[in-house]
Amino acid sequence: MRSSLIAGNWKMNGNLQSVVELVEGIKAGNAGKAELAIFPPAVFLMKVGGMLAESEIALGAQNVCDQEAGAFTGEIAASMLRECGCRYALAGHSERRSLYQETDQLVAARCAMAVASGIIPILCVGETLQEREQGITEDVVARQIDAVINLSGIASLGQAIIAYEPVWAIGTGKVATPDQAQEVHAFIRGKLARLNADVAEKVQILYGGSMNPSNAAELLSQADIDGGLIGGASLKADDFLTIAQAV
Ligand code: 13P
Image (cartoon, rainbow, N blue to C red; front, side, top):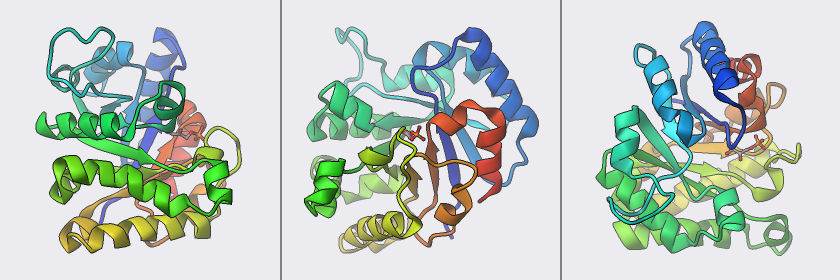
């Protein structure tokens, strides 16, 4: 039985004061039913890591460098994320792919470095509206996952999490129906099962894209949805905790 993870991707929002308040609010209201993880902007990781030191809430980064160390201005090494207390790092969020031109290969290299450094990567995959309308959702998701398998092998996904985030549902208020989401999650698990049944059974697949307190329960009740990657609704402690209660 896979456990559920409710992850809050705060993106580039907040300031030191609001971040501290949000962490305090989540800590105070955490009922401990689902595993929670929060992904603040990188400059606040050290601070939040300190605040979470004695708590059950995990810390994650919004990205991780594909290189170990050296002249990579603006990047953050997995070893540094570990020093901040990170357990997780996102890789290949659609905003990184579309706004900063991160390729499948770069995202796969980021995942590989995370795994090698003891950080659990959350590999984000998903199709644009145009790709869905063209009927190539599965091809796109398969290609994004294959880049990781080709570089690091199927076993590496046993040390990773996958987040299915249809691009058209991110920040739009347009949520995938539970059936639409389940269909893609089942496709992903089935694809992995053909290569390694253990990995497929074990890997957590999160749904992301306009998940909120009113739609979370139905999405989270689907057989292959093992949690959520939440953007906007993770910026309010009450909403984030209500989603966690829906597990
Ligand atoms: P929203 O929940 O704001 O749609 O964002 C989803 C997301 O991108 C999480 O990574």
